[in-house]
Image (cartoon, rainbow, N blue to C red; front, side, top):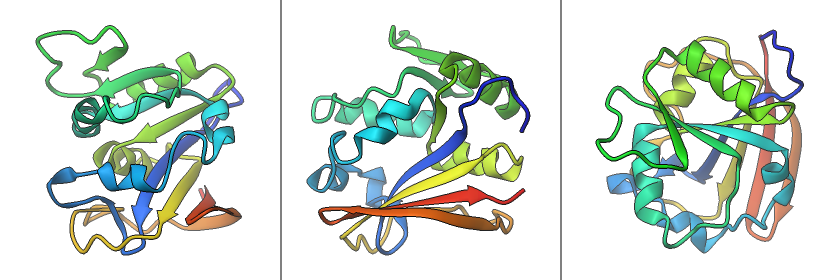
Length: 178
């Protein structure tokens, strides 16, 4: 992807050992049993903006009382239906995925654009818009929920370049081969 900024487009995922990014009913509270923003502060420091799917935004909004310490910069939510009541901390986008990534990358400046949400991440991966995938593997088996990659996602080859452990959390980083 060519862009004047030096930041990367990074899919950021927390995953159970059995491959789920959210539990049954899209629950994500299990994440905070193992992680805080202090677990890997360098990730937050490198992030200038976030592009989030509407479902992930809604889950995050329900959980905001529990976890408000992550600051990933400007927040953009890609949706077909902007909410009736605007959120002053979020810009809602109704454009296509390429335009959404370009808008959020511009806001990120020279920092990374973090992609959150299963559907938005899959769209970005399918269109070759992702530079890296960062996965936090947590020591839990959920048994069911939202899988890391949705059915139908084409094969994407990755090149591992880093793995770090902090307590029970392992962070794996991959370059997306293009």
